[in-house]
Length: 275
Image 1 (cartoon, rainbow, N blue to C red):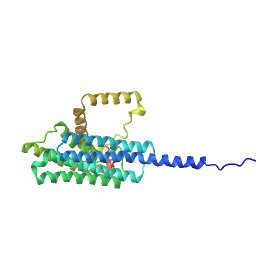
Image 2: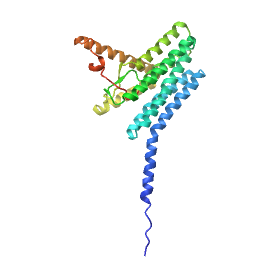
Image 3: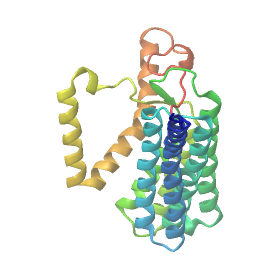
Image 4: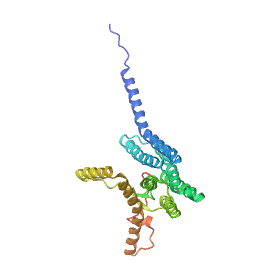
C-alpha cells in the first residue's frame, strides 16, 4: 500500500508569491533611493566646484523621480510609505542640491544675502511638498498649485548648465539672486501650472503620439541643453500666463474681483499629483 507524501507545493508557491509581491513593492522605493543618491552626490560635487556634473545629477534625479511613480502605478504597488519617502527624497534632490548648486555657482559673492536666498529656496520647496501631502486628492487634477519643486529645481539647474563657469560681476550676481527668489515665490504661490494629465495623445491618436515622442527625442539628442532650457523657461512662464489669461477672461465677463481659485476655468482650485 502506497503512503501519500504530504503536499508542500502549495505552501512553496504561496511563499514564492509573497516574496515576489514584496519585491514588487520594493521596486519603486529603489528608484526613490536612486533619486536621493543623485541629490546627495550633486551636493558633494557642487561643494567641490564640479558644478556641471552636479547639475546633470539633479537632472538624473528628476528622471528617477518620474520613473518611481510610474512604476508604482504600473505594478499597483503604491503605498503611503512610498509617497512620504518620495517627498523626503525630493527635499534632498530638488531642495538642498539645487540650493547649494546655485550658491556655489553665482551667489557666494553676496555673502549672507546669497545663502539667505538659497535657504529661502529650500524652505519654499519643502513647504511645496508639505502642501502636496496635505492636499493630495483634492481639487482639479489638470493643474498644479504653484510651481512643482522638480520644475523649480530644473529651472535653477538649467541656468547653471547653460553657463557652468561661476558668475562674476555684481549685476550678474544680482540677476541670479532675483531669479532664485522668483522661483522660490512661484513654488509657494497659488499660481496654476498645467499638469498635462488630460493630455493623452496615445489614446486618441496613437500614431501621432509616437511621431511627437520620436521628434522630441531627436531634438533633445541633437541639441539637449538649448531644448531643455527652452522647455524649462516655457513651463516657468506658463503659470503666470495662465493666471493673466484667467484675469482677462474675468474682465471680459465683468467679474474682475472674482476669486481665481473658485471660479476661473483657467486656474481652478488645484493640487499637485507630484510636487
